[in-house]
Amino acid sequence: MAESGTSSRERIVAGAADMMSRRGLSAMSIRKMAEHAGTPLGSTYHFFPEGKQQLATEAVRYAGEWAVRAFRGEPGAGPDTGLMAFVDVYRTILVESDFHAGCPVLAVAIEEPQTDEIPPALVAAAEVLDTWVGLLATSLRSHGAEAEQAAQIATLVVAAIEGAVAMCRAKRNTDPLDHTAAQLHALITGVIKG
Image (cartoon, rainbow, N blue to C red):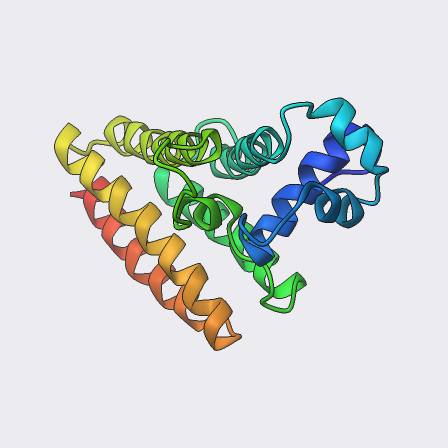
């Protein structure tokens, strides 16, 4: 996910997002995240003085924005183009990691909080998922879908893609993602043409 020429802070955030996509949040420590990002532990604490939750929260937001950029694509692109770009992001992550990485947002979302308080990373995960749903719903509405239908389909799309990514990791192939994408494509094109 990280691009060349990024700062140490950005490398740490990107590395944390990648590590969370592979191992979840509970299995990680600040030390492991720094090692994974190839940055000194002191730099990690310098940039993230509040510790693991602060870094995890920023990593979730980073992953969310990365997916949003892919979904938005070219100006004027419709919801189907956005869907396929979103699918392509995850297909690339899955294949390039040999099915060891998935979605860091989902990884944080499914973990049980260690306290009764809702951790900031979980709040960020919910916000990212809402952003993805909202972006797709807006695109569907602008292409003729009714507001309630657009919201429901957008929720279905995000839930289906996230579930398909998890299935791909388990099966070690992209068939679940490809099959899900084909059905979602048919659903979306039917809605925006209907």
